[in-house]
Length: 164
Length: 164
Image (tube, rainbow over all chains, first blue to last red; front, side):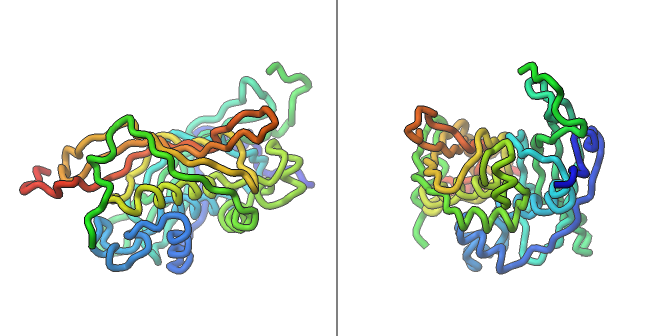
C-alpha cells in the first residue's frame, strides 16, 4: 500500500480546493428520490409543478451524495481519511433540478491535532455545490452547503505514546 | 387530491414519533458506497478491516438516506411537507454495518409560524437512528442524528394577505 498523498498536514485552515463538477442525471435523481425520499415534489411531475419548487427536484440527500463523490474523487481517494463524526451545518438554499451543472468546492475552516488521539488530525471544512449562472441574469446559486469535521492521519504517523 | 393528514398544527414541540425500523442491506449499502462514497473502508473488505471501523461500513449519506425514507413513510407521505432549508447538526456517532437493524425516530424541538410567510410553519426536529443492543452487553448505539427544519403547510391554509 502506498503512502497517502493527502495527510492532515496538507489540509491547513484557509485552503480552498475545487472538487470538479457534476451534471445532475434525471434518471439517477428520480431513482434515488423514489428509493429514499418519495415525497410528491421529488417523484410526481404534476405535484412538483404545483409545489413551491415549481418542478421535480433532487432529494437533499442526493445532492449531498453528489458533493461527497466529488470530494472523494478529488481529495479523499488519495488521502489518509478516517471518516467523519459529523458537523454543524447542512443547508439546501435552493432546489436542484435534473440537468443542473454543479461545481463542487471545499474550504478548510479549522485544523487541529486531536487532543485524545494525537495520531489523528481533525479538519473542519465547508463543502459547497454551486449552480452556474444559467445566463438569464439569475446569477449563480449555492444549492448545497455543509460544514463538518473529517479525521485524517498525520504524515509522521502515530506518536510513540498515546496519552489518551 | 385529499387534504394532508399531517399539518404544522400536528407537529408541536416535544412530540416524539417512532418512524419504524430498517435493516441495512449489504448489497444496497455497497452499491451506494461505490457510487457516492468509494473510500477504502466503504468499498474494500481488507482496507475496511484494517481501518478504525474494523469492517465495511455504510457511507454516512446512505445512513442519512435510510432515516429519510423512514421519515417519509411514517410522516411526510401524508403531510403538507414543503421541504427543508437545512439544519444545524448532523452526526454519525458510530459506524453502521450490513445487517444492522436500526430504529428510526424523531422528536420535535421547536415549531413556529414563519414570520415572512405565515401560511408556512417551521418545524425543527431531531431525527435519530438507533441500533438495538446486539445482546453482547454493548448496549444500544445512536448511529445517526440530525437536527433540521422542515416547512409544513398550516391546516387553515394561507391567510388572506401575506405581509412579506
